[in-house]
Image 1 (spheres, rainbow, N blue to C red):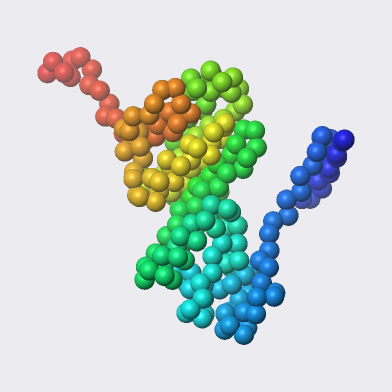
Image 2 (image 1 turned 30 degrees about the horizontal axis):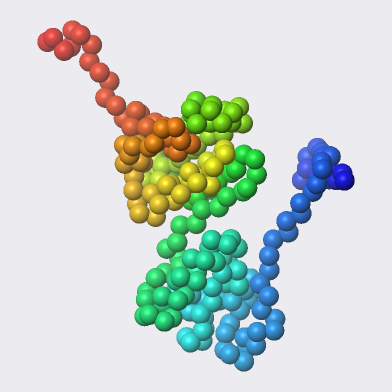
Length: 233
C-alpha cells in the first residue's frame, strides 16, 4: 500500500511526503481513572500520580512507578528503573531518589538518534554556557567498513564552558543507542570528558567516535610547542 502526509510547516511553507507506510505516534496518557485513587488517599493531576523523590505517593504506603507518574519521561527503560527505585525504597528502606536518574533516549530510525542530558538549544535556553566537541562518523573505520560513512552520522558532546563536565550529548548513526551508554554513565558518575578521551576504545567500533570527539577537548588545551630556537635557548 501507499501512504501520504502533509505538514503545514507551522506558519512556514508546508511540505508533502509520499511513502510506503505512515506511523502516527501520539504519545501516552496515564490510565488512572478506575484505580480508586481518591479512596486510597493518592493524589494525582492531569499528568498522572504525584510522587516525591522516592516515588512515594501522598499515601506513604503506596508507591508509583513508570508511565503513570506525573511528569516522567514515558520510556520503557525509565519505567524499569522506576520499578527498581520503588522496590528498594518501599520494601528495603532505601533512599534512592528517582530525580537522580540520568535518562538517555533513542529514536530507532535509520540511522539511530540517541540523546542524553542537554541539547545545545536547551543549554542556550537555560543560560548554560557550553563548549561543543564533535566527531563525524565519515572518518570512523567501523562506519566505513559497514558502508555507513555517508549517512551523516556524528557524535556531539557538550561540556560546561571552562571545564570538562559533560552536560549533554547526541549521537547519530547506526548503533547510536549503544554508544550513548558510555556518555550516560559519564554524566551520572561525573566522569569528565578528559577521562573519556583517555580511555582506550576497541578498534574498529562506533564507540571510537565518542573518544575522537572527547579528544577534541584534550587537543584544545595542548600547550603550543616551542620552536627549535626556543628549545635551544
